[in-house]
Length: 199
Image (spheres, rainbow, N blue to C red):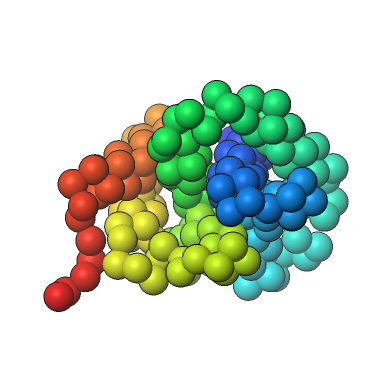
C-alpha cells in the first residue's frame, strides 16, 4: 500500500470528521451531517482531479473512500459527547486534514507530470477547497477569505516538502515533517492571532 493511498484515506477520514462536527455545530440532521462530511472529505480532491485530468476522480473507483467517510461519520456520532467536549476538536481535525491533503495533492500532481509550481497549487486546492465547500454549505465565510493563516500554511508545508526532498532521500520523514510544518504553523497562527490582514 503506497504512501499516497494511505495519506488519501487518512485525510479523507479526518476531513469527514471535521465536516460532520461542523454540521452538528450548525444543527444539521443525520442526513445533512453525512452530506457535509462527504463534501468536506472529497471536495478538494475532486476539484484537483478535474483540473489535472484524473478521470474518473479518485474516490469514484474505490469503495474504501465511502467506507472511510462512513467510519468518520459514525465516530463522531458514537463519541459525540466526548469529542464535542474538546472545544478545539473541529480545529484539530481540520488542521490535520489540510496538512495531509497538501502533501497528497502535491504527490498526485507530481505523478501526472506537472511542474513544481502547479503541484504546489494543486496541493493547496486539495487541502482547502473541501473546507471552502463545507463553509459555503453551512453558511460561513470560508477561512481562506478571512485573512487567516490557512492556505498560506499549506503553501509553507509544500515548500518544506520540496526543500526536504532536495536534501533527504527518506520519503517518510519528508512527508511527516511537511505535514507537521502545516499543523505547527496553523496552530501558532491561531494561538497568537497571526493574520494576513493589512489593516
